[in-house]
Length: 143
Image 1 (cartoon, rainbow, N blue to C red):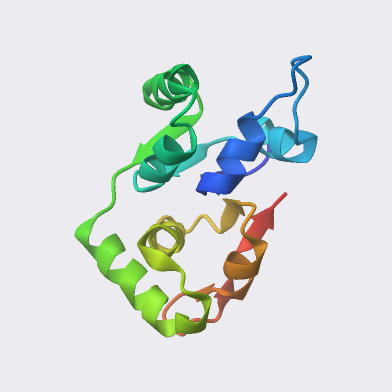
Image 2 (cartoon, rainbow, N blue to C red; image 1 turned 60 degrees about the horizontal axis):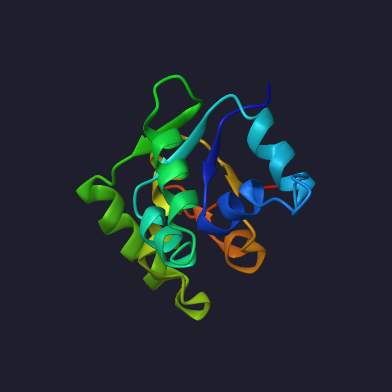
């Protein structure tokens, strides 16, 4: 098993996508998800996932059930007030990226939990973000 990861919206959706034949649409994302010892799901990404799965409510219900099933490796992470504040701080610090609250909070949760691996398809933003007290720590983008 690989170390824990923080799930971002695009990374999680790609990891779970499958082709009509049932094979993973994005095998490298699926492998990153299935090989992680723990998948931390920041709560705010569920709003974005809900939006993207608005035409597939069954998939949304299945994913939410898996996230909250204690037998899975998913761990739902409600944002602390300090995560929201830090997310906004990161959004302001990296204003040219226009991170937004969700991505800022994903980075804030990674910082607080000290889990620097992020399952994401948003390489532009997450490769530029730096976290930590001196904004010196890069995130490891998975895959």
